[in-house]
Length: 141
Length: 185
Ligand SMILES: [Fe+2]
Image (cartoon, rainbow over the protein chains, first blue to last red):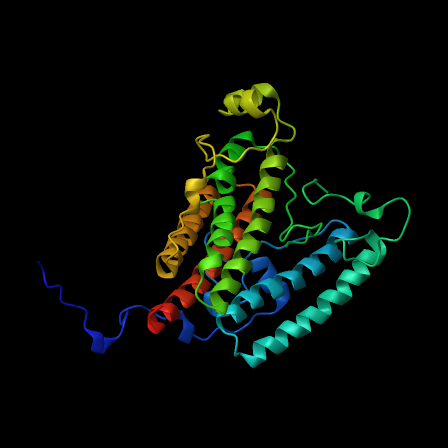
């Protein structure tokens, strides 16, 4: 029989040497820049090849408006992931709700002109069925 | 449940066909470090996360990865769209054409089909989160490899966006992991 002793130093606590991201500052960049970077947080941004992120130059008004929808959608996605691990950050919750209001506005504007983006849209009461009359996202514009 | 939105998270508009790039890029669809593996792994692991933060994070990153599956699929579709059979054979996609035509099929860059082994779930939150942190780093590295294989800004821009998301996902998994470690979960 072996007598296994715990060689782990309990007084030190786990993972003393692990860098904790949780204590790092995570300040927000504006949603337009955050969207083209793919990252809303200044301190976490870590580009690879180009020093400047790729600029999006929409060729149509539809694409330009859709990029606004994408921009606020993205801000909400990234802020939500942050809030999942930092649920007590009151300031970021405020910013989340500001972007949420902006997303509702641009989505409504987009859908009123170019048709529904989802089945919760208010613009599905036309004939014929509007859901199949707008382009699918994988088609080249 | 999930709701569909008729837009990509990040726009893809590839004007020039590039069959060879499609063959390499498909690994981020159906490869070990690809988006499909990530999406399904996180959505599968979330049930046994020990607290509300974990259940939320795995659900939300898993959901975003589904949007990334759609971006990569769109890229592969657009790169292949105008390719001839001869061009596909020449680029090493003759086998793909024989089996799937121009249809999408999740494989890695060597044509090895997607497998459920990529789910890699233990039910232990620390082990699962470390698995996911490693997966995010591997996905980032594969995106960098792919970025070195093309000069087309239509391809580079979405790859650069997706690569940046891996950095964020890694950071969030690490935050959760470190908190669980500290709380002894
Ligand atoms: Fe990811």
